Length: 359
Image (cartoon, rainbow, N blue to C red; front, side, top):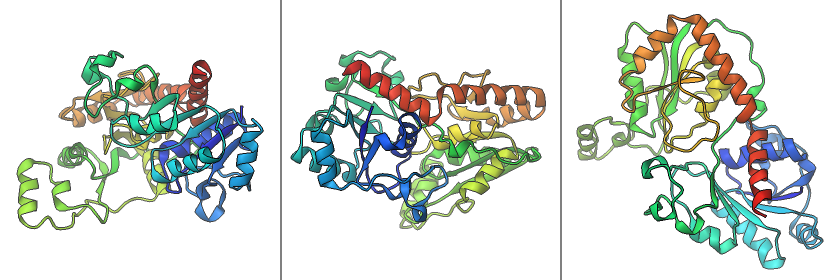
């Protein structure tokens, strides 16, 4: 199979991971990213979670000719972002494209049915795909508001994050001298709550914290309603984080030193951290997922899922801290499960199997 992969120039974890997986399964020679994305090919734009390949030196006219000759089997709109949409529309104005599917890795749970319909998408793949709040049924009548759209019921499939081969490169063994770690942007109140609970548990060796972006305001890092209102009354000044953003290599090293590590939802439930913790062979403690994750980790087998308010988080850390054999068993089971179901190659295979079945 040969694939046209329409890209946005900005980094996009889901789109970038699926490109990585398609190249692993099909060979990069059979994946035509358009426009060519610097992070995939240019050494000066390399990012830690992606391997690079030479790529194709094809321009618009080259690709139009390739598509016209029916040398491409599938078109993928890798993102609903402007650059990817523009790239696809430019090609579609010139030549009839092969069947097209759409990926949506945005944090929200909105199904962008108008966009998908306008490009004639046969399937829609959604990262934050939540059915639990509506009873867990694929019943179009239950798709309402911003969550779903009956026009794509039955044609929308979950596509969560995964781990790239670059993220699985082994790190040196380090002493597990940290009881629990967590690092994340202050993009959800539960992250602030997790840091507070772990900091207040003075019998635990906690490392990490939350960081802020230059655009974040003080109300965003207030855990309570009162704190948010007080910040706004002060003019909502710039936020202050508890730590500085950590470089990827330093974060991976911290995970390797941790007896347990925590993943907490940000803009959406699915975070790269959820998968990176397991890739570091560190026991994962998380909120229970409220999105659909095919072949997800199981509570007590591969991970620990704590209460929605995180009130039992410190106790789970204490429990695992005292049981090295259980930590090792859980980490090994989760890592094996990750390799079996949650690498980028597995995600790409899952995606292509669904596409073949629908087309």
